[in-house]
Image (cartoon, rainbow over all chains, first blue to last red; front, side, top):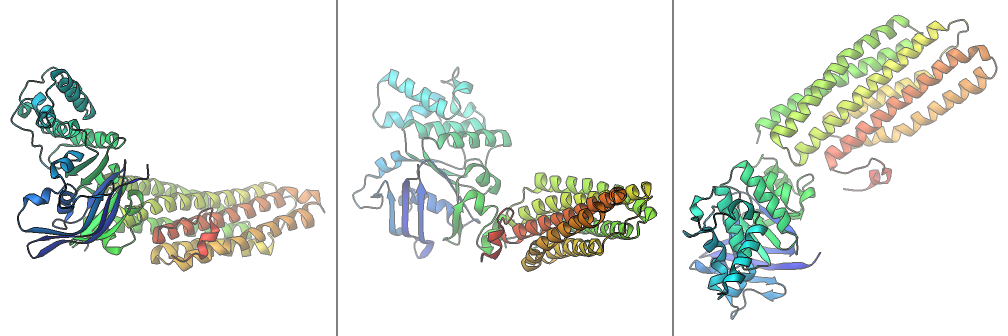
Length: 252
Length: 227
């Protein structure tokens, strides 16, 4: 506990000429859930995607500063990005299972990482589906197409897919925004359980969700980190007026 | 930017101020009834308590609904939770005024030997009135300094209560045991008045939490800390 997992230092991010993240410095602790909140376009998702270099896929982007994960700068030139993304998994806003069976979805990452042993595959798939709190609902229909699942189940399948390759950090970009309240509650429950083993960073527009599930809340605005701290404090006594305006819905 | 919640908060504020006005009225009546041993006024004050109870329940429902429907954060959350506490504290003040009126009735029932209310009782009554009024002013204006004044004043109230009790025991009751029934009623009334001052202090502490998000309850040393 109380160990720094991700250390962001004087980090800047540019899309062409436009600077989207300005001088961000932040420590993200192991086994904590960190929520990133802020108005649309403030750079939340951009920041999240910087943590596993997903933004590399977009041309004309540029970074300054460093992001250390377990002490290693992930922007080092010869860093193996595939390895990085294995360590730092991601779950997206809309459930995006592959057009394959439930089993194949959960096994996907393992297979492309070269795992061929069928028994071991089955074992790991079961474990990851269990960890994603989905096993009970799908164990008798593993060969069904993933699209037959409900939205909430699909999202948990995506969590299972991310968990299967045993990441250490899980990034979630508004994972509950397309889910109904019951599916949202299940996903939140899952997140709270997962933090025992993983470090979780979640972007959310839902203030109550951030309040319910995260240990630390980070407020970004126009690419700048305005305020961060213990969630219980940010939501009862924010230090900055602009944070207060945002979280009480008086912003704009 | 004004939002829908602001209107609801304004309504809560208005209801709390109505409750405060009724409660201040009850304090005034109970003190006058005590000073003059006026039974009729005491009866009236006891009857008024029903309205205060009703309003307390209404405000409680309102605040619970606000929490459930708006899931407020930060200063909104602090305002509503403070409102909830002030609501119960004011209602408790009103109950204490009922106690005082009950002492007036007790004295009327045991009126063979009269004991005049000591002058310090009036003084304590004035302090109680002032403290409640000032605490509510602090709530309305969001003025931390007014709240601090209330908290500091409580010590004076405690001392005065002790003076009154000592006087009633040492100078009245021990000298003539026939005074015991009325002197006891006065002694209990002094204690009730002092408890009203305590409630005012709690309100002031809540107000400081509302304004500064600083908990000074059980931590008087934090009063002088800069924020």
